[in-house]
Length: 147
Image (cartoon, rainbow, N blue to C red):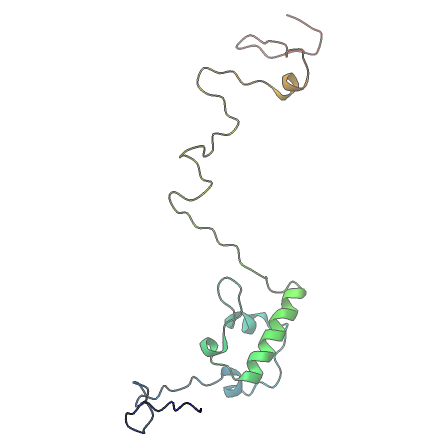
């Protein structure tokens, strides 16, 4: 049996709340300037259509028409391959309590001797013979020579 989706109300369809408001579409900057061909070497133009992190901006954000958005995307990808544009931008943020930072449980104390502990040299760790001891204030001389 065929199911009737009409739920009894009025026969008119539901209308969106903001149907009365019309949003003016942003004109394509390249169409406005009569640009026929997007050059991959024009880095200044291409950077306008990239985010600060190096991503290609969406068509609804940049306001480009479909054809120019496609041309810009191809030009940006070509410029990236030729190292004219970066794939990504490295951003550094300084936030307190970030992961892997210093302080906190086990953060940044790797390999450091505790108070009162002596640090062994890598040569001592590899061989069984201890390194030659040097008195405080003296500099070690050539091997085999003692003061």
